[in-house]
Each structure stands twice: as C-alpha cells, then as structure tokens.
Image (cartoon, rainbow, N blue to C red; front, top):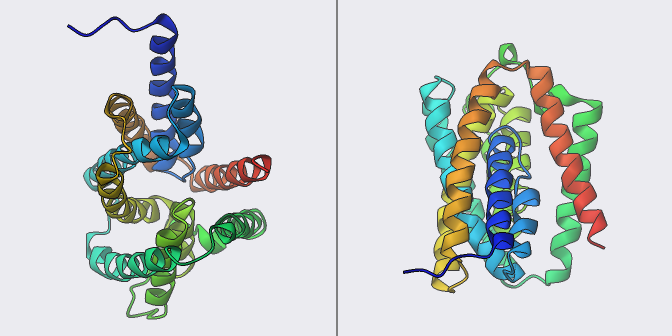
Length: 258
C-alpha cells in the first residue's frame, strides 16, 4: 500500500493538472504552454532537467490528441503530411547534431531573437504569417522554397526546441498560406514526432518522473480537446491575437529569467 501524500503535495498535483489543461488548450492553437507546466513541475521538487524530461510525455500526448481532434473536425490537410514532415524531420536531425557542438550560451539569444521577430511580425503584419482561410493554401510545388523553410524550422527545432511551434506556424502560414487552424494541425504532427524522439532520450537518461508525467499528460489531453473545439469555431482574428499573446508571453518569460 502506498503511503498517503501530504496535503501540500496533493494541492501541487491539482495545480499541475490545471496548468496541464491550460497548456494543452494554448498549445494546440499557438504554443508556449510549457511556460505554465515547467514551473509547477519544479515546485514539486523536480530538478530542471527532470522537469524538462517529465514535461515531454505531455508534449507527445497533447500533440497526438490535437492531431486526432483536428482530423476529426476535417482540418488536417492529410495531403500535406509528407511534404511537411520529411524536410522538417531532416532539419531537426541536423539541428540536433549542431546543438551538440554549439556553445550553450548562444541558444537563448537565438530563441529570444526568434521570438521577438515573431512578435513584431504578428503585431505589424499578422496576416503575413497567419492568413485567412481564403488566402490559400499553396502546395510545395507552387512554392518549392517552402521546403527550405520547413527544413529551417526543423533545424531550429532540433537546435533550440523551445518555441519551435511558433516557427512552424510562421513557415506554414507565411510560405504555404495555411490558415491558423490548419497550420496548427500540421504543426502538431511535427511536434509529436519531435516529442517522441526527445522523450525517448529523456527516458534513456532516467529524467522522467512518471507520476507527475502521467498527471500532466492526462490533463494536457483534456486541454487539447477543448482547445481544438474552440479553435475550429473561433474567429481567425482572435486566433491571431492568441498566437501573438503566446509569443509575447514567451519573450517576457525569457527576459525575466535574466
């Protein structure tokens, strides 16, 4: 029989579940949900590396859940999966290899610079990266250089990881002209693949605390289902603002860490 948990720890698990629901909700529409979940995992006493590994199970579950929900709603462009996945995964492999040799000090400036540029573009020219449904989409054959953009997004994801969802949204919307909903559906396919690889690495390194990971995974699945239901009915202008606010929150969080 397991020993009873202290009331404070029960409360923290409840807070973790709430953070997971919120993270799942925001991640299927924009990104940055880990800004909510990682601090709670560390409040539970997990070291930063273990919190990071524990969080990856939820990244996978919410991504898969979101993909299935978008597919059920008819918002997953299945014909685009191959052209999107192949260059992105190849880029991620290259980016991960580069990260193994790059000085760690350059990772955060790259992340911060990317997020600032994203926030400015979304504020000044939101339709440039988040077009309306009537603006597209375009196939990779119509814009073959989009494959280079997807490869670049993959390199970024493999190199930095944090914020890759925002970069994928920018490429899918800016180059291939997918509206925010369909771009998010495709983005989640990529983050699911990234997440499986990363989770395997953290499991091998014994950096996953499974009780917290399970609570968070279940909560983020619930949040992702709610998020997709909201996204497919919401006004595109509202979704663009959600993406902008998520990017802005990421920028503020990065700045406050220094």
